[in-house]
Every structure is written in C-alpha cells, then in structure tokens.
Image (cartoon, rainbow, N blue to C red; front, side, top):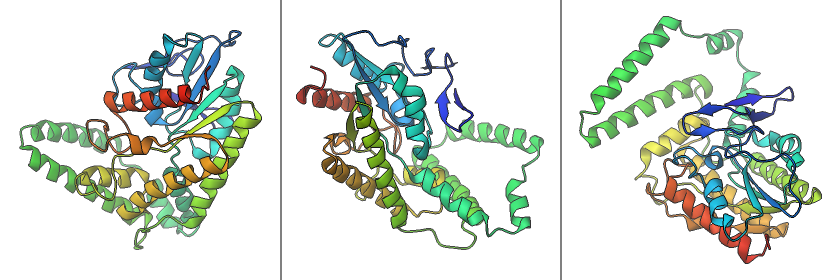
Length: 328
C-alpha cells in the first residue's frame, strides 16, 4: 500500500485496498475527497506515521476519522484529511508535504507522531558500514535459502497454534525468550561486541529540534496553521516492568543500538523538545501524551492505539480546535 517515488519519498498508493485499510484516489486514507477545495471550506490535514494512519483500530476508528465525525455536524464545511504515511522518513516529511499535501490547499496541519529513532538507527548503521570488512558485508547481504524461509514460516505458525493451549503466564515467558533471542542476533550483527547506548547522542536531539522548527516554519510560510502535539506512548519509567515484552519489541524494531533506558529517555526527551519548540515558535500545542491513560485499554502497543485511545486523541484535538477558534 506504500510506494517510493523517483525522489525517494514514500507515499500511499492511490486506490490501494488491504483488509480494513483503504486508500482513496488521491492517495490518502479515508473517504474520497475532491482535488479542488470548495470555496469557504476549511481543510485540516493530519500528518504522522502509522499511529495516525491507523493500525489496531477498527475501520473508520483511527483518530483523524473520529475527529472528522466529531466536527461534521457543527462544522459541515470542515474536511479532515488523513495525510499520514506509515514509516515516512522524518527527513523526507517536508518533501512529502510539498509534493503531495500542499496542492490540497490545507488551512490547518495537525503535526503528530514525530518519531526519529528509526532515522537515528539508520544513520548509525550507515556510519558503521564504513568500518565493516568485505566478509562482514557479505554475511550481512547473504539471504537464507527459500526452502528454509518456507519451513521457518510453517514451524512458526505451528508453534503459535500450540502456544494457544498454554497458560498466559507461560506464553508471556516464551514471547520474552523469543524477543531476547532475536535481539541478541541483531546485537551480534550491528553492535559488533559493543554495548548499546544508554542515551541518544545529543547531536540527534539537536538535529530533530532543527528539523522540527524548519517544518513548522514551512507550514507558516505556506499559510497553514500548525497544531503541534506530543507523541503519546504507553511505556514510561514507572510501568516499564509491567510492559517488559512491549519494551523489548520496541528495542527490536527501532534499534538494538539503543538500550531499554535509551528508548525511554528518547520518549521523554522528544516530548520535552516538542513542548519547548511549541512555546518558542508560538504555535498551538496539545500535550496528548499527558491526556491519554497509560494502559492497554487505550494502547495496542507502545505507539499505536485502540478505538478508545484514538477517541481520546480526537476529542482533545477537537477541544483545542474549538477553544482557539481555529475553524470559526
């Protein structure tokens, strides 16, 4: 459902369909919209990644869709467009907006889900690639035989079926053991006998800050009112032991170069930067991270939401839009 154009910008494939996910003719999730904005209409674009695109929610329950429903009766001339792309590179976000979003002539941009750990991980790995031997590079590029891939998938499915018969506590331990095993494999591949970082390098935080300021100014220059939000996540320093497996999965996905402490440090530091920049740049700000309860009733995993979680996000954004009379 996602493609990369000639400039290396990820975007949704127009008219793509997969299960509950549907992309309209213009390449955005949700119902069809006109290319030309009708006179007197107000367009709100929601910019984020998979947490905004929608993942665990039922069809039409991702927060941009719920926000549109909340606004429809009182503000019939307001269009909410889910312009997010799952996995959009943080460094390419401005290019994506310029090419795919600006032609829609949006009036308000809700900027959500500023996630830069994948970019930091890729940067570190590219840097390390210069020090690998030819043998190391060959091993990295080697792919297992297709027969082993098929057998592995079959055994994995068989194992999942058997595990359903086990008590929940046992399956939790099995899941943790598997995650740790996969993490060790990635550590052997990417850390090369080094310890993972306990804090993100200050250079990445400064780069994130610079890029976010540029992105906000870009919105203003194009007569778009930015609404900046913190990025809600489930795991905090206080509940990390309760959600140990989710923390392990987060580290596995977003980079074994960073320790569990570094993952949590990144979550806290990033939202502090967002809050500071919102005040510094005088943009409308909402601290969604503080407003959504940190339980599995509202989160499907560390970064994605349930129907209830998305409802809370939509309701609080609705309140901000009406409180500041941004859609009057």
